[in-house]
Length: 431
Image (tube, rainbow, N blue to C red):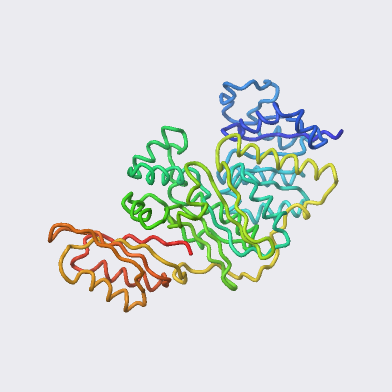
Protein backbone atom coordinates (compact mmCIF):
# COMPACT_ATOMS: atom_id res chain seq x y z
CA UNK A 1 0.00 0.00 0.00
CA UNK A 2 1.40 3.36 -1.05
CA UNK A 3 1.99 5.99 1.64
CA UNK A 4 1.51 9.68 0.79
CA UNK A 5 3.03 12.18 3.22
CA UNK A 6 1.30 15.47 4.05
CA UNK A 7 2.49 18.69 5.65
CA UNK A 8 0.05 21.35 6.84
CA UNK A 9 0.92 25.05 7.04
CA UNK A 10 -1.63 26.89 9.18
CA UNK A 11 -3.18 25.54 12.38
CA UNK A 12 -6.20 27.81 12.64
CA UNK A 13 -9.90 26.94 12.38
CA UNK A 14 -9.72 24.91 9.17
CA UNK A 15 -6.24 23.57 9.88
CA UNK A 16 -7.40 22.12 13.18
CA UNK A 17 -10.32 20.48 11.39
CA UNK A 18 -8.01 18.89 8.80
CA UNK A 19 -5.68 17.58 11.48
CA UNK A 20 -8.63 16.13 13.38
CA UNK A 21 -9.88 14.29 10.28
CA UNK A 22 -6.47 12.99 9.19
CA UNK A 23 -5.73 11.64 12.66
CA UNK A 24 -9.17 10.29 13.58
CA UNK A 25 -10.20 8.99 10.14
CA UNK A 26 -6.90 7.51 9.02
CA UNK A 27 -8.23 3.96 8.96
CA UNK A 28 -11.39 4.94 7.08
CA UNK A 29 -9.38 6.90 4.48
CA UNK A 30 -7.10 3.91 4.00
CA UNK A 31 -10.06 1.57 3.49
CA UNK A 32 -11.79 3.83 0.99
CA UNK A 33 -8.81 5.08 -0.99
CA UNK A 34 -6.40 2.15 -0.76
CA UNK A 35 -3.73 4.64 0.33
CA UNK A 36 -2.07 5.52 3.61
CA UNK A 37 -2.37 9.30 4.16
CA UNK A 38 0.38 10.14 6.63
CA UNK A 39 0.42 13.52 8.43
CA UNK A 40 4.11 14.35 8.89
CA UNK A 41 4.25 17.97 10.08
CA UNK A 42 2.11 20.95 11.10
CA UNK A 43 3.63 24.43 10.89
CA UNK A 44 2.25 27.56 12.51
CA UNK A 45 3.76 30.60 14.19
CA UNK A 46 1.27 30.24 17.03
CA UNK A 47 1.28 26.65 18.23
CA UNK A 48 -0.84 27.50 21.26
CA UNK A 49 -3.80 26.73 18.99
CA UNK A 50 -3.14 23.03 19.68
CA UNK A 51 -4.92 23.59 23.02
CA UNK A 52 -7.79 21.15 23.37
CA UNK A 53 -6.38 18.83 20.70
CA UNK A 54 -4.24 15.77 21.24
CA UNK A 55 -1.52 16.27 18.67
CA UNK A 56 1.86 14.56 19.04
CA UNK A 57 4.50 17.20 19.77
CA UNK A 58 6.83 15.75 17.12
CA UNK A 59 4.38 16.88 14.41
CA UNK A 60 4.54 20.55 15.41
CA UNK A 61 6.95 23.18 14.16
CA UNK A 62 7.18 26.93 13.71
CA UNK A 63 9.52 26.49 10.74
CA UNK A 64 7.58 26.50 7.46
CA UNK A 65 10.71 25.59 5.48
CA UNK A 66 10.94 22.34 7.40
CA UNK A 67 7.82 21.31 5.46
CA UNK A 68 8.68 22.90 2.11
CA UNK A 69 12.19 21.44 2.00
CA UNK A 70 11.34 18.01 3.36
CA UNK A 71 11.82 15.66 0.39
CA UNK A 72 9.58 13.05 1.99
CA UNK A 73 6.51 15.33 2.01
CA UNK A 74 4.41 14.88 -1.12
CA UNK A 75 1.51 17.29 -0.46
CA UNK A 76 1.65 20.74 1.14
CA UNK A 77 -1.64 22.06 2.54
CA UNK A 78 -1.74 25.88 2.80
CA UNK A 79 -4.33 27.10 5.31
CA UNK A 80 -2.99 30.41 6.57
CA UNK A 81 -5.19 32.50 4.25
CA UNK A 82 -4.60 35.99 2.87
CA UNK A 83 -2.36 36.96 -0.05
CA UNK A 84 1.06 37.19 1.57
CA UNK A 85 2.94 35.08 2.55
CA UNK A 86 0.49 32.40 1.32
CA UNK A 87 1.27 33.18 -2.33
CA UNK A 88 5.00 32.83 -1.83
CA UNK A 89 4.57 29.62 0.18
CA UNK A 90 2.41 27.99 -2.50
CA UNK A 91 4.71 29.02 -5.36
CA UNK A 92 7.78 27.80 -3.48
CA UNK A 93 6.09 24.47 -2.76
CA UNK A 94 5.22 24.09 -6.44
CA UNK A 95 8.71 24.94 -7.66
CA UNK A 96 10.08 22.36 -5.23
CA UNK A 97 7.83 19.75 -6.84
CA UNK A 98 5.25 19.55 -4.07
CA UNK A 99 1.57 19.07 -4.80
CA UNK A 100 -0.61 21.71 -3.13
CA UNK A 101 -4.03 21.91 -1.50
CA UNK A 102 -5.41 25.31 -0.47
CA UNK A 103 -8.65 26.84 0.75
CA UNK A 104 -7.41 30.36 -0.08
CA UNK A 105 -10.24 31.96 -2.10
CA UNK A 106 -8.83 35.49 -1.93
CA UNK A 107 -5.47 34.42 -3.37
CA UNK A 108 -6.98 32.26 -6.12
CA UNK A 109 -9.41 35.02 -7.10
CA UNK A 110 -6.80 37.77 -7.18
CA UNK A 111 -3.70 35.95 -8.45
CA UNK A 112 -4.80 32.44 -9.36
CA UNK A 113 -3.49 32.59 -12.92
CA UNK A 114 0.12 32.71 -11.74
CA UNK A 115 -0.43 29.76 -9.40
CA UNK A 116 -2.23 27.64 -12.01
CA UNK A 117 0.48 28.37 -14.58
CA UNK A 118 3.21 27.42 -12.12
CA UNK A 119 1.45 24.15 -11.26
CA UNK A 120 1.18 23.33 -14.96
CA UNK A 121 4.80 24.23 -15.63
CA UNK A 122 6.17 22.12 -12.76
CA UNK A 123 3.66 19.28 -13.31
CA UNK A 124 2.26 19.48 -9.80
CA UNK A 125 -1.33 18.88 -8.73
CA UNK A 126 -3.45 21.65 -7.20
CA UNK A 127 -6.60 21.15 -5.14
CA UNK A 128 -8.86 23.98 -3.98
CA UNK A 129 -12.30 22.49 -3.25
CA UNK A 130 -12.61 24.29 0.11
CA UNK A 131 -12.11 27.72 -1.49
CA UNK A 132 -15.80 27.91 -2.43
CA UNK A 133 -18.79 26.60 -0.52
CA UNK A 134 -17.04 25.02 2.47
CA UNK A 135 -18.26 21.43 2.49
CA UNK A 136 -20.21 21.75 -0.78
CA UNK A 137 -18.31 19.93 -3.60
CA UNK A 138 -18.99 22.60 -6.22
CA UNK A 139 -15.43 22.64 -7.61
CA UNK A 140 -15.57 18.91 -8.31
CA UNK A 141 -19.04 19.22 -9.87
CA UNK A 142 -17.95 21.97 -12.26
CA UNK A 143 -14.63 20.34 -13.08
CA UNK A 144 -15.95 16.81 -13.58
CA UNK A 145 -19.74 16.36 -13.48
CA UNK A 146 -20.37 19.26 -15.89
CA UNK A 147 -17.33 18.63 -18.09
CA UNK A 148 -19.49 17.95 -21.18
CA UNK A 149 -21.62 21.07 -20.67
CA UNK A 150 -21.49 24.62 -21.86
CA UNK A 151 -22.38 26.42 -18.65
CA UNK A 152 -25.21 28.91 -19.03
CA UNK A 153 -25.51 30.29 -15.51
CA UNK A 154 -24.07 29.93 -12.02
CA UNK A 155 -25.64 31.74 -9.12
CA UNK A 156 -26.06 31.26 -5.43
CA UNK A 157 -25.65 32.17 -1.79
CA UNK A 158 -21.91 31.96 -1.19
CA UNK A 159 -21.47 33.62 2.20
CA UNK A 160 -22.88 32.15 5.41
CA UNK A 161 -22.37 35.24 7.57
CA UNK A 162 -24.41 37.49 5.27
CA UNK A 163 -27.08 34.84 4.85
CA UNK A 164 -27.40 34.50 8.64
CA UNK A 165 -27.82 38.26 9.01
CA UNK A 166 -30.45 38.50 6.25
CA UNK A 167 -32.34 35.48 7.63
CA UNK A 168 -32.47 37.05 11.08
CA UNK A 169 -33.54 40.46 9.71
CA UNK A 170 -36.34 38.75 7.79
CA UNK A 171 -37.57 36.43 10.54
CA UNK A 172 -37.31 38.86 13.46
CA UNK A 173 -37.69 42.27 11.75
CA UNK A 174 -34.50 43.40 13.45
CA UNK A 175 -31.92 45.88 12.21
CA UNK A 176 -28.69 45.02 10.42
CA UNK A 177 -26.70 46.03 13.50
CA UNK A 178 -28.75 43.77 15.78
CA UNK A 179 -28.42 40.81 13.43
CA UNK A 180 -24.67 41.36 13.04
CA UNK A 181 -24.21 41.54 16.83
CA UNK A 182 -26.00 38.20 17.21
CA UNK A 183 -23.86 36.66 14.44
CA UNK A 184 -20.72 37.78 16.27
CA UNK A 185 -22.01 36.46 19.60
CA UNK A 186 -22.61 33.04 18.02
CA UNK A 187 -19.17 32.99 16.36
CA UNK A 188 -20.72 33.11 12.89
CA UNK A 189 -19.29 36.54 12.06
CA UNK A 190 -15.63 37.46 12.44
CA UNK A 191 -14.61 40.27 14.77
CA UNK A 192 -14.07 42.28 11.59
CA UNK A 193 -16.74 40.98 9.18
CA UNK A 194 -16.04 43.50 6.41
CA UNK A 195 -15.16 40.93 3.72
CA UNK A 196 -18.41 39.06 4.37
CA UNK A 197 -20.92 41.91 4.68
CA UNK A 198 -19.38 43.99 1.89
CA UNK A 199 -19.85 41.18 -0.66
CA UNK A 200 -16.09 40.85 -1.27
CA UNK A 201 -15.95 37.26 0.00
CA UNK A 202 -18.74 36.29 -2.42
CA UNK A 203 -16.92 38.21 -5.16
CA UNK A 204 -13.78 36.10 -4.61
CA UNK A 205 -15.80 32.89 -4.78
CA UNK A 206 -17.75 33.74 -7.93
CA UNK A 207 -14.46 34.71 -9.61
CA UNK A 208 -13.18 31.17 -8.99
CA UNK A 209 -16.42 29.63 -10.29
CA UNK A 210 -16.27 31.85 -13.38
CA UNK A 211 -12.81 30.49 -14.18
CA UNK A 212 -14.06 26.92 -13.84
CA UNK A 213 -17.40 27.34 -15.56
CA UNK A 214 -16.68 29.88 -18.27
CA UNK A 215 -12.91 29.76 -18.77
CA UNK A 216 -12.60 33.48 -18.06
CA UNK A 217 -9.80 34.86 -15.92
CA UNK A 218 -11.91 37.71 -14.61
CA UNK A 219 -10.48 40.62 -12.64
CA UNK A 220 -12.20 41.45 -9.37
CA UNK A 221 -12.66 45.08 -10.41
CA UNK A 222 -14.86 43.86 -13.27
CA UNK A 223 -17.30 42.17 -10.88
CA UNK A 224 -19.94 44.65 -9.72
CA UNK A 225 -20.10 44.11 -5.95
CA UNK A 226 -22.50 45.45 -3.33
CA UNK A 227 -22.88 44.37 0.28
CA UNK A 228 -25.70 44.24 2.79
CA UNK A 229 -24.60 46.97 5.22
CA UNK A 230 -27.13 49.51 3.98
CA UNK A 231 -30.14 47.21 3.88
CA UNK A 232 -33.14 48.42 5.88
CA UNK A 233 -35.45 45.81 7.46
CA UNK A 234 -38.42 47.72 6.04
CA UNK A 235 -37.32 46.77 2.51
CA UNK A 236 -37.02 43.12 3.51
CA UNK A 237 -40.56 43.22 4.87
CA UNK A 238 -41.98 44.99 1.79
CA UNK A 239 -40.29 42.36 -0.37
CA UNK A 240 -41.78 39.57 1.74
CA UNK A 241 -45.27 41.09 1.40
CA UNK A 242 -44.87 40.91 -2.38
CA UNK A 243 -43.67 37.31 -2.32
CA UNK A 244 -39.91 37.81 -2.31
CA UNK A 245 -36.94 37.09 -0.04
CA UNK A 246 -33.81 39.24 -0.04
CA UNK A 247 -30.56 37.30 -0.44
CA UNK A 248 -26.97 38.28 -1.16
CA UNK A 249 -26.48 36.53 -4.49
CA UNK A 250 -23.37 35.99 -6.58
CA UNK A 251 -24.43 35.67 -10.22
CA UNK A 252 -22.58 34.69 -13.42
CA UNK A 253 -24.67 34.41 -16.57
CA UNK A 254 -23.56 34.00 -20.15
CA UNK A 255 -24.84 36.77 -22.42
CA UNK A 256 -23.53 36.24 -25.95
CA UNK A 257 -19.81 37.01 -25.94
CA UNK A 258 -20.08 38.78 -22.59
CA UNK A 259 -20.46 37.46 -19.06
CA UNK A 260 -22.94 39.12 -16.72
CA UNK A 261 -21.19 38.70 -13.36
CA UNK A 262 -22.16 40.54 -10.17
CA UNK A 263 -22.70 40.32 -6.40
CA UNK A 264 -25.50 42.22 -4.65
CA UNK A 265 -28.62 41.90 -2.49
CA UNK A 266 -31.35 40.45 -4.70
CA UNK A 267 -35.08 39.84 -4.46
CA UNK A 268 -35.90 36.23 -5.29
CA UNK A 269 -39.32 34.60 -5.33
CA UNK A 270 -40.35 32.81 -2.14
CA UNK A 271 -41.14 29.87 -4.44
CA UNK A 272 -37.45 29.63 -5.37
CA UNK A 273 -35.59 26.99 -3.33
CA UNK A 274 -32.85 29.51 -2.56
CA UNK A 275 -35.36 31.67 -0.68
CA UNK A 276 -35.52 28.92 1.94
CA UNK A 277 -31.75 28.61 2.37
CA UNK A 278 -31.43 30.03 5.86
CA UNK A 279 -28.79 31.17 8.30
CA UNK A 280 -25.22 29.87 7.68
CA UNK A 281 -26.13 27.50 4.85
CA UNK A 282 -24.99 28.08 1.27
CA UNK A 283 -26.53 26.97 -2.02
CA UNK A 284 -25.23 27.12 -5.58
CA UNK A 285 -27.29 26.64 -8.75
CA UNK A 286 -25.55 25.55 -11.96
CA UNK A 287 -27.21 25.16 -15.35
CA UNK A 288 -25.52 23.45 -18.29
CA UNK A 289 -26.80 22.95 -21.83
CA UNK A 290 -26.73 19.14 -21.49
CA UNK A 291 -27.37 18.42 -17.80
CA UNK A 292 -29.86 21.20 -17.18
CA UNK A 293 -30.04 22.75 -13.73
CA UNK A 294 -28.57 21.37 -10.50
CA UNK A 295 -28.64 22.82 -7.00
CA UNK A 296 -25.89 22.12 -4.48
CA UNK A 297 -26.78 22.84 -0.85
CA UNK A 298 -24.96 22.51 2.43
CA UNK A 299 -22.73 24.02 5.06
CA UNK A 300 -20.78 26.84 3.47
CA UNK A 301 -18.41 27.45 6.33
CA UNK A 302 -17.10 26.03 9.57
CA UNK A 303 -14.05 24.06 10.58
CA UNK A 304 -15.16 20.54 9.73
CA UNK A 305 -17.17 21.15 6.50
CA UNK A 306 -14.23 23.07 5.00
CA UNK A 307 -11.76 20.54 6.37
CA UNK A 308 -13.76 17.74 4.76
CA UNK A 309 -13.25 19.40 1.37
CA UNK A 310 -9.54 19.88 2.03
CA UNK A 311 -9.16 16.18 2.87
CA UNK A 312 -11.08 15.20 -0.28
CA UNK A 313 -8.47 17.13 -2.29
CA UNK A 314 -5.64 15.46 -0.39
CA UNK A 315 -7.04 12.02 -1.22
CA UNK A 316 -7.71 12.96 -4.86
CA UNK A 317 -4.14 14.18 -5.28
CA UNK A 318 -2.80 11.13 -3.45
CA UNK A 319 -4.59 8.94 -5.98
CA UNK A 320 -3.12 11.02 -8.78
CA UNK A 321 0.37 10.52 -7.40
CA UNK A 322 -0.27 6.82 -7.05
CA UNK A 323 -1.56 6.52 -10.62
CA UNK A 324 1.21 8.73 -12.03
CA UNK A 325 -1.30 11.15 -13.57
CA UNK A 326 -0.03 14.36 -15.07
CA UNK A 327 -0.97 17.70 -13.53
CA UNK A 328 -2.37 19.00 -16.79
CA UNK A 329 -5.10 16.38 -16.50
CA UNK A 330 -6.06 17.62 -13.03
CA UNK A 331 -6.93 21.24 -13.77
CA UNK A 332 -7.44 23.22 -16.97
CA UNK A 333 -8.71 26.78 -17.17
CA UNK A 334 -7.62 27.72 -20.67
CA UNK A 335 -10.69 26.46 -22.55
CA UNK A 336 -12.64 28.77 -24.88
CA UNK A 337 -16.37 29.34 -24.31
CA UNK A 338 -16.61 32.31 -26.66
CA UNK A 339 -16.80 34.81 -23.79
CA UNK A 340 -14.55 37.80 -24.36
CA UNK A 341 -15.20 40.00 -21.32
CA UNK A 342 -17.47 40.85 -18.41
CA UNK A 343 -20.55 42.94 -19.13
CA UNK A 344 -20.84 46.40 -17.59
CA UNK A 345 -23.51 46.66 -14.89
CA UNK A 346 -25.04 49.57 -16.84
CA UNK A 347 -25.91 47.08 -19.61
CA UNK A 348 -28.01 44.91 -17.29
CA UNK A 349 -31.70 44.37 -18.06
CA UNK A 350 -33.76 43.15 -15.11
CA UNK A 351 -36.67 44.08 -12.85
CA UNK A 352 -36.21 46.41 -9.89
CA UNK A 353 -37.58 47.18 -6.45
CA UNK A 354 -37.58 50.92 -5.71
CA UNK A 355 -38.42 52.76 -2.49
CA UNK A 356 -38.75 56.52 -2.65
CA UNK A 357 -38.95 58.74 0.44
CA UNK A 358 -41.12 61.72 -0.44
CA UNK A 359 -43.11 64.52 1.17
CA UNK A 360 -46.79 63.57 1.03
CA UNK A 361 -48.38 66.17 -1.22
CA UNK A 362 -50.29 66.22 -4.53
CA UNK A 363 -48.30 65.46 -7.69
CA UNK A 364 -45.50 63.46 -6.08
CA UNK A 365 -46.34 60.14 -7.72
CA UNK A 366 -46.97 61.82 -11.06
CA UNK A 367 -43.60 63.58 -10.90
CA UNK A 368 -41.72 60.35 -10.18
CA UNK A 369 -43.66 58.40 -12.81
CA UNK A 370 -43.03 60.97 -15.55
CA UNK A 371 -39.26 60.84 -15.05
CA UNK A 372 -39.30 57.04 -15.07
CA UNK A 373 -41.40 57.05 -18.25
CA UNK A 374 -39.02 59.45 -20.04
CA UNK A 375 -36.23 56.95 -19.32
CA UNK A 376 -38.35 54.02 -20.54
CA UNK A 377 -38.85 52.54 -17.07
CA UNK A 378 -42.24 50.83 -16.87
CA UNK A 379 -43.96 50.44 -13.48
CA UNK A 380 -45.47 47.05 -12.64
CA UNK A 381 -46.75 47.67 -9.10
CA UNK A 382 -46.84 50.66 -6.75
CA UNK A 383 -47.90 51.18 -3.15
CA UNK A 384 -47.95 54.32 -1.03
CA UNK A 385 -48.49 54.38 2.72
CA UNK A 386 -50.70 57.14 4.13
CA UNK A 387 -49.14 59.60 6.57
CA UNK A 388 -49.84 63.07 7.83
CA UNK A 389 -49.69 65.80 5.20
CA UNK A 390 -46.23 67.29 4.86
CA UNK A 391 -44.52 64.24 6.39
CA UNK A 392 -42.19 61.87 4.47
CA UNK A 393 -43.95 58.81 3.08
CA UNK A 394 -42.49 55.67 1.46
CA UNK A 395 -43.52 55.02 -2.14
CA UNK A 396 -42.59 51.48 -3.16
CA UNK A 397 -42.52 50.28 -6.76
CA UNK A 398 -41.69 47.16 -8.70
CA UNK A 399 -40.70 47.75 -12.31
CA UNK A 400 -40.92 45.67 -15.43
CA UNK A 401 -37.67 44.75 -17.21
CA UNK A 402 -35.52 47.86 -17.45
CA UNK A 403 -32.00 48.92 -18.33
CA UNK A 404 -29.76 49.65 -15.33
CA UNK A 405 -28.04 52.59 -17.00
CA UNK A 406 -31.32 54.31 -17.83
CA UNK A 407 -32.73 53.59 -14.40
CA UNK A 408 -29.69 55.09 -12.67
CA UNK A 409 -30.08 58.21 -14.82
CA UNK A 410 -33.76 58.48 -13.84
CA UNK A 411 -33.03 57.98 -10.13
CA UNK A 412 -30.32 60.62 -10.19
CA UNK A 413 -32.90 63.10 -11.53
CA UNK A 414 -35.63 61.98 -9.11
CA UNK A 415 -33.38 62.27 -6.05
CA UNK A 416 -32.85 65.96 -6.86
CA UNK A 417 -36.58 66.75 -6.67
CA UNK A 418 -37.52 69.05 -3.79
CA UNK A 419 -40.08 66.60 -2.38
CA UNK A 420 -37.60 63.66 -2.18
CA UNK A 421 -36.09 63.47 1.32
CA UNK A 422 -33.65 60.55 1.02
CA UNK A 423 -31.69 58.72 -1.61
CA UNK A 424 -33.88 56.16 -3.37
CA UNK A 425 -33.40 52.52 -2.41
CA UNK A 426 -32.83 50.24 -5.42
CA UNK A 427 -32.73 46.44 -5.31
CA UNK A 428 -32.56 44.12 -8.29
CA UNK A 429 -35.09 41.33 -8.77
CA UNK A 430 -33.78 38.03 -10.11
CA UNK A 431 -35.28 37.08 -13.44
